[in-house]
Length: 187
Image (tube, one colour):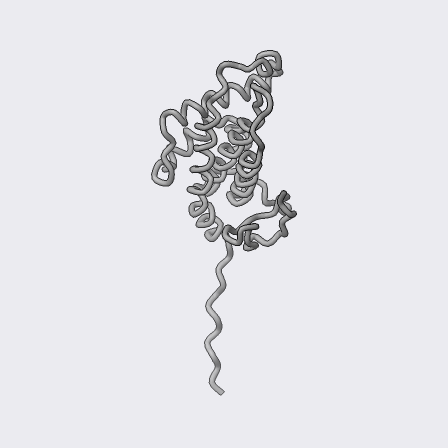
């Protein structure tokens, strides 16, 4: 179990390697690349921490990996200056639209989503849509379109760390730069 994180974006993670963000972003942080990225990391960590399922049908890891992928894609989109309002109103939870838009903005130069992974994203989106539209009978009886968990897991485990540099570069672009120090005065 993770200890609550502080609000310092430069704080090290539990393993001492990765800078982390707060589990609840400060006011105004929603929609910023780092907020999406930090939550993508947390969803990925949560999915990886789950024990093997006891039931034959257990969609929770699918949901966690899918959401990690969605948030990572949104972090990339924000890092590429897609307005937060556009993500909120147009893309919403459409992971297929997020993937397509990210690919148009150069995602393939940072991380290539393979054809089987693209198919898994489409399957995950279709499944989540069934849940959103309250088709609970289909969703809970082992909907045949649920993607292979290993494909989603591999995608999330590859995509999230691959986007770190892009997201942090965008963060540095947002930070104010220090003006040059004043020249020393003679005298």
